Length: 326
Image (cartoon, rainbow, N blue to C red):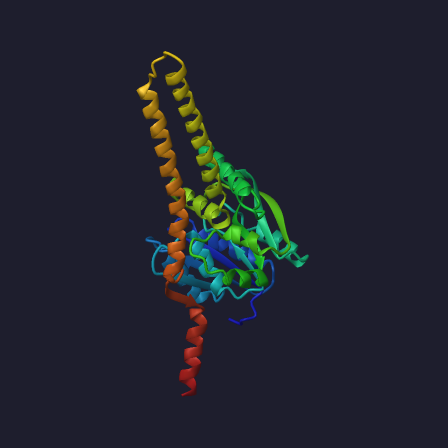
């Protein structure tokens, strides 16, 4: 394929065999309407099903399809980063393989990009097919993140977005390990615009963001862009210390100036446990930051590519041409 690619579509996938064929069909149909050169970059993030093999077969006869096969599961944000590293397009679109984000919205993103916006992101106004707990925790996370950080990270947005080539190049310069891509896109700046949409429920398969991964993503987002949790721990520590000192003054007053017997060992133990609990929470917050510093100092690569499949059909044609010349 020519290196003069207009659009790069990055599709991270992890065990998406049940939906990947329909994902390929819909994205292919949408991009065909642009009448411009594009590439579909599927990033296999350590899947244990057959989705990688399916994309490998597509790449044999469809020269627009590329497959980055990672050596193991490195995580969704790292898979997106790998796709950006390999993308050649003037505009790069990130979309998950589960079809909760409609590929048809890519055309609207392209239209805004051609109007001069370097980042066009999709903002969810409705989340279909998700539990109330998932909706509530997601809404809470975005608002806590907005309060905690000094940069403006749009609420109710995921990684579904279009970024200009210059934005992609700036993101490639950021080497941090615990990545929060949507936050990094906001951090680099440039002209950005939102497109509102209703998020569909998953077509097939299971969610790849259970509670444990949601919590990790939340911690990555907050600790990558804010040290306010550390300041908050300091404020709470000062408040608890002041409260403890006032309580101690009250106990001394009772002992010295009254005949009252100081009672309530249970309450004292309760207060002690509360203080100890706060200390452990503060140590946990410190541990999150120290752990991320440790990750950065190890100097390991973000990911390892096991195989990269690109235009096998063209490679075969090229090899046949070489043999014919010989």
